[in-house]
Length: 369
Image (cartoon, rainbow, N blue to C red; front, side, top):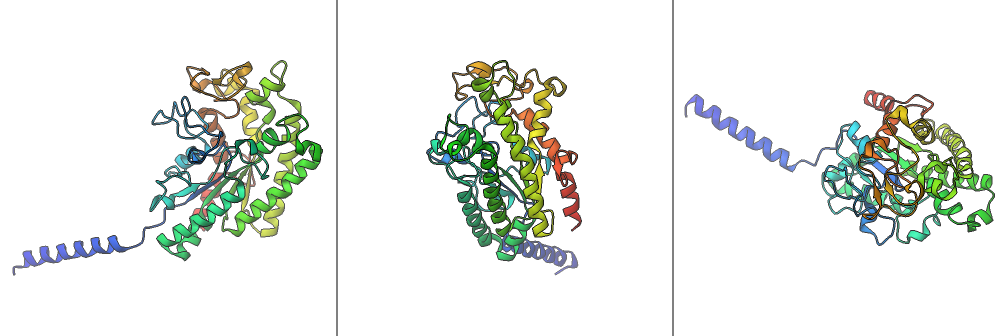
């Protein structure tokens, strides 16, 4: 055999050996998994797989999504988790109930969120079959078992510990529970200040459980300005002013949430939980829409009735031609463009928005450790 042919022969075997080795190794973990828990503000389509009325699976939902079709996101296009994934250079996380969430896709993370849920189990009972928060946490355990079969227990623990986690809860405990009907069961049971204290104590248990399950970097959003969404303007406002009682609820809830997060972090001995001031992020463009390129922050793009705030967004609803100039897509949810502003503050906002640090700081810090 000539020297040239032996080199070729050797190279071929080397390449073949490398290919065989690559084919048999376990899948490599991605740079950072992203795990999402919560309600319709962050649900990417889990409710499409459930028998429930809390769903966004028909047009015009998804009109500005890359496929221009409804995906189960309560948005005209991308929602907050999608935009976070985009900004950190990852694929969007799939809904946990999606049949496509298998193999390597599991290493990207998973979205466990379900529209209509709250901190409390009785929140959203009118929607029937939704994934309540403790069920989401059970699915998170199941997710870890599935990842373990893929990359082993030690790698799975590492993936979960290093994952970025987002949790969005609380709004529905007010709009779809305490204030759902006059003299609701919860409003007869609790004064508003007592109800808020009860919610915070229950939320603390949820966050503590997330920590026990391995979450080490958790973005916790407070409630937005619930009294200013088109649905509440339609039902409670005379001249387009934000509904006072719901704003008071947010004013009580959000500072106590931050206080509880600080307490948990002190107990754990590290900045595991990061408070995102969703109230302030929304109020920026609600109180001065023109400064952010919006024509209105009162009227929803899709809906009917005053402020397009009554009922659901359907194919029969009023629909605006340009979603980019509306702060709200439907009666409760921001437009994709408003979501982009919110994510910008999550990424690089000052401590007025993100406490104790923003996502860019977290990413820089974690890349060094």
